[in-house]
Length: 351
Image (cartoon, rainbow, N blue to C red):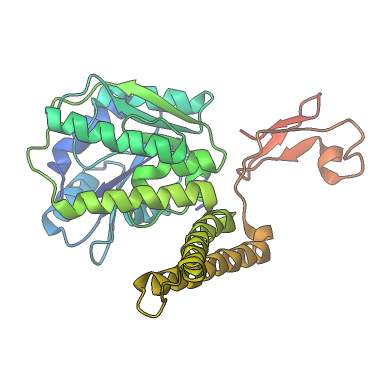
């Protein structure tokens, strides 16, 4: 949704799911932190599922004249979907996402906003000093080390939902499933500047429960998904080709050994399960390789529609657009759709 002439400077998206605090109390806490930014703001609460008591609390806030909007989903779709739905209802040039329960001290929100007003396109929170049990510290450490190995990006607190970004970050990214956790990874891959900011952890940020075994399985699959998205989205043949060639090679070596064993030592092949395994590996390797080739053909067909880069600045020589209407008026169109006066050096900053 494009900005209106009376749009607030800051749009806050708060997805409300199964885990949430008292929303009226939470809003009062966040409001104090948002006031420290010195910016006009709006808050969009997205109710992910049937939450009638929470909806009534938010309606009371709206009735008191608070800048609160509520989006209610028909059922639970997940935090990624809630964030994207909430984004469609925002109008600010800066987007701030906050959890439905306290993770950071609200007075630290201004740090994230200042980072985005500076050099960063996306500022994410790192709760420090972090409170937690030894098991939680170990679990977080293993998770972030695996992410760093898979993506080459050493983030320290991907579980924190307090993030601030320029509007075009969410305009060019599409989140689904549980990808909200990996927003910094996907944004960096797209060419955005990501900065991690140390913020104070909220005294109320305590999770007494535990996670089921399937949650750990889901996180492992998420790591593999992000690994593939970051490294092989536009070159699937490198991944599937490597796996396919390795599998095919193992099958060839196994069958070659069996053939030598047959010719040199006279051992029969009819009762050798290894022959079936070698043949299966060769067929499977060719199929996996073909899958990668098919992916390459799809990428090639849609290459013009894929944009995985960001332009920071365009510098033109004086006669480059002499005959264009933009040059005649001395104005240049920026990426976010706004218009700005062209500097004397003919430099347009697109950051």
